[in-house]
Length: 311
Image (cartoon, rainbow, N blue to C red; front, side):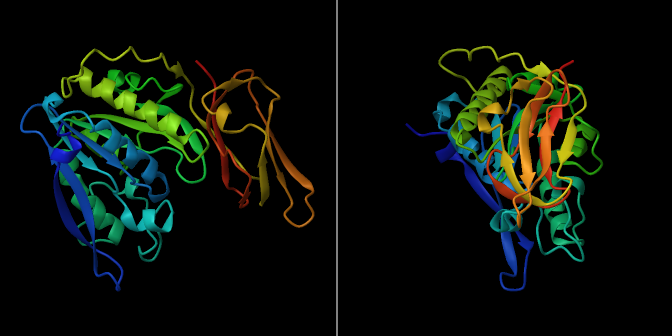
């Protein structure tokens, strides 16, 4: 059996890089000859990319005969950031720039602005964009961002939580929406003991979405998506002071709702182990959208949780 993945035609664009490398590749694969074109993109934030990229390869293990539309994959959109395990590239001057904030880019700008300028035509040449993010190397997430006009696409993923996406100036999905393209932003998974569970949930969601868009045929119709819990505007909970973060709620709590007063985690002084801050659930129903599942050192102001309330 020849798979969709094995049938990809790969392309590379050379992007200016650091002085030692001169250039790095922006690689993307394409398959299919007609019908709806879906572009899957991962790693606009370098520390989130590997988990999302693997879901693409798993999705494309279906036989090539099952492909009814066109698929393009960009597994690593921000390679220098991925190499450094950082959100943004380290070679922008004078300051790091968020790739997911500079679309449609600038061909004569910084490294990241040039990346966006190379990716923008691939976005524009799409009917649907699935923008894969997730928790990455330091946290785990369990929600999908829903955009007006693409509600069914978001619902197809059956994530524990679903929120209305903000209008982010320069964002990849904002840019795509402005061109009339259907979009969804997947904030699911990340490093934890459950990382392959979330990997499989993303793959199932993509299969369902592509089947419903008549891009992929399957031996049987996918099971209906679980109904996601709608939540209010998200809230970020940050460290008041730096120290050792010790989670009380671990990876199995992401995607759940906990009652007010539930201890979520605490920060200890790294010199004396004095308890400096305790995180407790503030709402009668506190939706755990994002959390740090492991003991780690955090800086003062560091993001520790994203929460919301069901609506």
